[in-house]
View 1 (tube, rainbow, N blue to C red):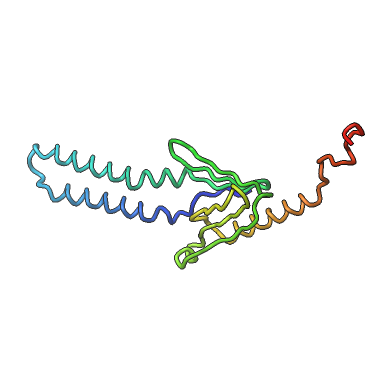
View 2: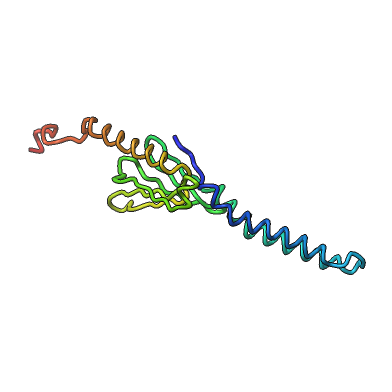
Length: 170
């Protein structure tokens, strides 16, 4: 079983914003004159504004990253996401018809990518972004889908046919 979160590179931009936010708040506070007690509301306002920017631009993406999980079991592929309200999607392995991945240049450097899972009918196509170790995940999922298909072909069909019908039906 694999249990994954999106790749950590999704937090690079929010982390950079957090660093710039803290640096800007410190710089503005240091630029203010040190004397005078009437500047405490301004310093407090700068601190609150910096905290608000940090929560919105780093806290939200971090919680989204932390609460998004991808699970691959020997029976299904599961996607769970959401901070306050959760959503989920399950793909039974026996319904998956194709597993592929795409990687851009930056994704290849980090070893992540987009996993594309296709199933016929209403399940449709599922694209999972920023999957870490994408080649390993795609290979594992492809192998599990193949194993599931082989197991399904080797199992006897338990559906009754005409030979099993009572004579009164014939």
